[in-house]
Image (cartoon, rainbow, N blue to C red; front, side, top):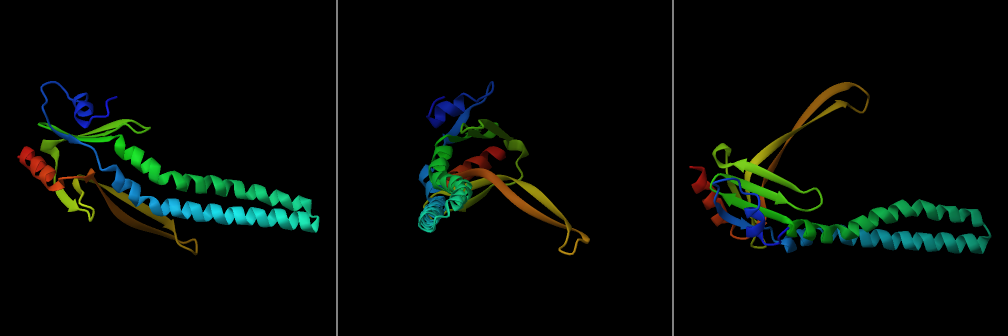
Length: 191
């Protein structure tokens, strides 16, 4: 697969379709958003290492060697913490392998990271286009939304309550430069 957004988007075009715009999200934006997870991972690993050293020291000094088995309880926590450390790098890789495109007929979100998918949205079926500016100079252009309904069946006392909550998730081109120009281009193509 090509790493060039224009080339990658052209490979998804259908017959008689013209490519208008293609780009990918700014990978540094997604990297920075996951830094807190990496810091939490470092803190957790430090605490686990201190705990392991404490268990080893007290086990040997007191002669209670079976207590060393407590070290095995820390292994799953180390695995989770390692995953947290990798979050920023994974977010950057995901962004570098995501491509957005506008054609004369549809909008494309191409994901070449692990699960490899192509989402296509017909321009004539879009209900809205919304631009949201980010503080780092990038922006998001949303053009579709999904409603997620959650139903909780029981309250704390075990009574059936059937509480229902609805959450709206917007989807679109996230973390791109010139989001306002992209919004204008999509709006122009919709009419």
